[in-house]
Every structure is written in structure tokens, then in C-alpha cells.
Length: 164
Figure (cartoon, one colour):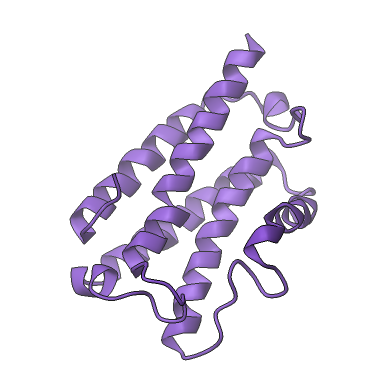
């Protein structure tokens, strides 16, 4: 169930990040970069999650500044996510596993700073500016953070089971 207030969002983000971090500690370096049948690695998934937190923070800032908000990113539509994600994997391909884990940790800290800096009313009182839908900033933050952490954990657990 989605968080509906700042306290729940904070707890959910911490809980899901801690679960993901514990899983990351179990991922061997060589396994982290091994591609699955869809040519995606654990490293790719974690880099993606870090990137989407930054996308959310950019969407929020642009909306607050009255700038156009490009969902999911400038030049892409939601139905073009496969192409966007492929381009992102290419951009991040030279990053090491340790660098990608550091990116995720840094993005998580920025997300938590964002949540801490905003009131419950700012997070859940009105739709996020520029989003052109009825999702609140808190709901977008959850989608970019805890929900993505949960799906990454699910993917990693599945890959670790396949490794055995």
C-alpha cells in the first residue's frame, strides 16, 4: 500500500533501502555485471534506480520553477522506456560495480534529504507541479525510491536463486 504521509514515506524508504543494501552485500562483483537473458545486469538495475531518483528530483525542481517537466525525460515518452533505459545502460556502462553502488547510496541520501526538507502538506497536500496528473510529490518520491528499491530487491533475489 502506498504511503499517505511523510512519516510513512520516510519509514518505507528506509526499510526498502535497508533490504536492498543487505542484498547488495551478498552480490559478488563478477555476478553483479553478468547479463541475464534480456542483457541486463544487477549493476544495470542498481544504476537505473539511482538515476530515477535524480529524474524525480529534477521533475520536482522543474515544476517548482515553472519550467516544463519532461516525463520520463526530454525527448522520450512513457512508451519509449525501453529505448531510454538502453541509452542509460550505455551511459553507465563504464561505471564499476562499486561506483554504481555509491551512486545509489548518494541518490538515496538526496531523496531522504528531500523528504526531510518538505512538510507533510508539501509532500501529500496537492498534486506535484508540472506532473499533469493527480499524483502528489510524496507519491512520486515513493515511486522513484521505495518502490524502485523493492523491485530491484525482487530482481536481485531472483537472480541470486538462479545463481545457485
